[in-house]
Amino acid sequence: MSTETLFEAPPMAEQERMVEAILFASSEPLDTRALAARLPHGCDVAQALALLQKRYAGRGVHLLRSGDNWAFRTAADLSFLMQKEVVETRKLSRAAIETLAIVAYHQPVTRAEIEEIRGVSVSRGTVDLLMELDWIRLGRRRQTPGRPVTFTTTPGFLAHFGLETARDLPDLKELRAAGLLDNRPPPGTSVEREVDDDHDQDDMFE
Image 1 (cartoon, rainbow, N blue to C red):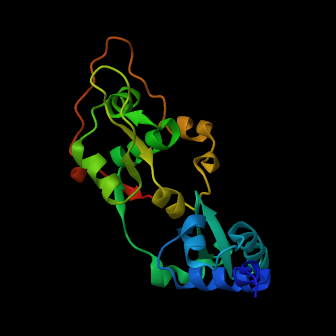
Image 2: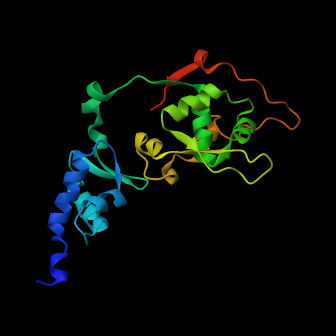
Image 3: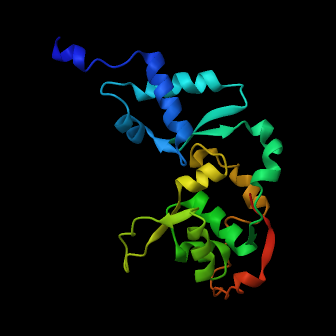
């Protein structure tokens, strides 16, 4: 038996089944590198995912891509069936909603830039909350005086809001109309101090 025969990849149908089993059993989304590490040598993960995604299209469960990760998710039009099991009350202050929106649309963005857009200072509690939710994270430092850190959204943010990439976010005009973006203070106006987020609760942000 030749070496080439020993390392021959399984048929594509079998590769598809393997990927399906791995994703079904995983408690979190997986990227192609993680999938390839669990499959036999020579498997075509990308093709297996494409076939699997096509096979699940139109069913009650879909194979969805979020960033570089893949996971099975309930079809969006059937989510109402799961509400009693999965709804979790999580209220965010208006400050947190605005900060999250600014990071999503202006990333990578520094704290100073967030404050300039909002017109008020950003409390540490607001940033800590969004990081605890795994919706924002620290990005690269800016190559400017002081080398301030930047903030970006996370794969968890994309997964929570059902987005494949940040490009799938709602139109900027909608957020500007709501007053969440580009609310820059007039020149010479000092940045106001933000009220404690714990006392400024808004509607649930899903």
